[in-house]
Image (cartoon, rainbow, N blue to C red; front, side, top):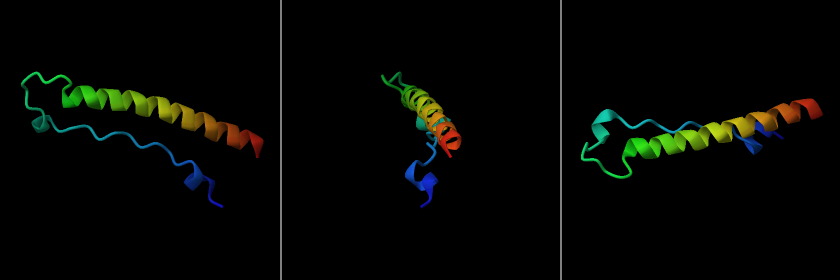
Length: 59
């Protein structure tokens, strides 16, 4: 069994292109949403890495 497929590495969110912003002061702006997704990704990545490290120690 392939363990990496059981616990795939999180993928970073795609940063919006600057021309995707309407520059009208939307709340939330697409860049605000991106920053939130990026923060969640960073937490997920740290948790994933901790699981990988724990798996390596238990083998």
